[in-house]
Length: 319
Image (cartoon, rainbow, N blue to C red; front, top):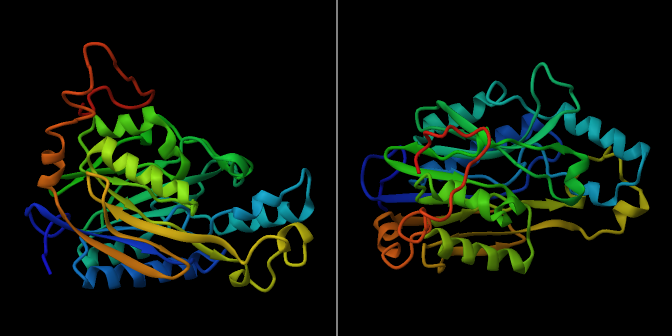
């Protein structure tokens, strides 16, 4: 297998991994341990960039779909989620260590809490660690979607930035924030080659979006999608027996992870209803080749007519 890319030298080939796995639901410590095992597995297969789903630690708050105003059960679930949220990067040492041992960059979705803020202030966050175990930064979901608005606070433009490791630029948006044209463009203009799209969306329409974004960005797209089954929640889960919760299907989130080329073709996936790690070897020169005909932040950007300013993002950020 080729060995190149982020954390593995300066070659033009990068092996990426999209992790499709189920957290140990609402147990942050156990889920972090599982994530470390998956990083080791992907690293052993030569992955230089390993991507986890949205809010992998400790769970995606799908149960909020059935929430009712002032509902006592949902209040207790929220408190449980808050107890199992993590500080970034302070509580993610096991991930940093696993990234270092695997010599890979890791992007992992977490529910974040912040020292000095209310313990009820939670963020849907994508945290990045480099192949030396260093903390690279984070992105917070800009807008919580539908039921998520009862759980997560809004992120800001200060975390809407690309990362770079070993000459490879990458960045991502979380779930339906990928439908925000200006947020996508904010990443394109920073020169990304690999676009990350961790999500909880398992609908067929999501695959259409991934193909479009690959063609629009002329980037490789790595989409890691959640698995979540009702039967895997703890025995003492607060909503067990609640009619609104029990009426939903066993599969809350079915997966659909995939990896796409800059022309929108699939390199791996989509895969549903099973734990797996998808791999693909990316020829980074293909990003440049595909931009011969369309470059969204280059000759096709109409920079003399259209400009984007992102509040909180350093104006010196690469354009």
